[in-house]
Length: 80
Image 1 (cartoon, rainbow, N blue to C red):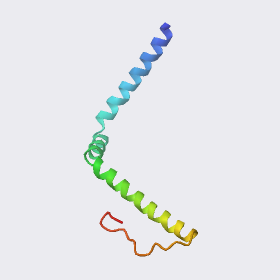
Image 2 (image 1 turned 30 degrees about the vertical axis):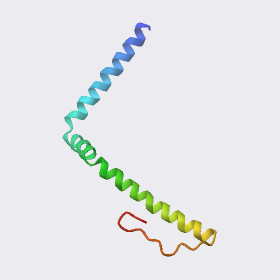
Image 3 (image 1 turned 90 degrees about the horizontal axis):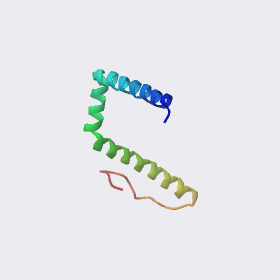
Image 4 (image 1 turned 60 degrees about the vertical axis):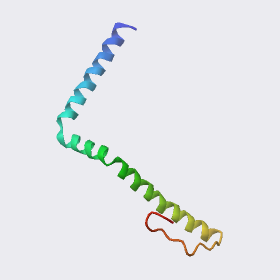
């Protein structure tokens, strides 16, 4: 490596270290980060549930395209 490369990399490290320090000083960002980490499993579960609605809408569209009868199905209590 050339000395200029090392100097450039050191400058980038210093910049990143400074940005991390600023982020750590912002208590609202730390609170948001903590809330996301604490509730990550709930967030993932809600994300999966939102995909179920998309899947049901796809089924409805497919059934109308191919004239299929899918009456009698409903989504309730996280089950179809």
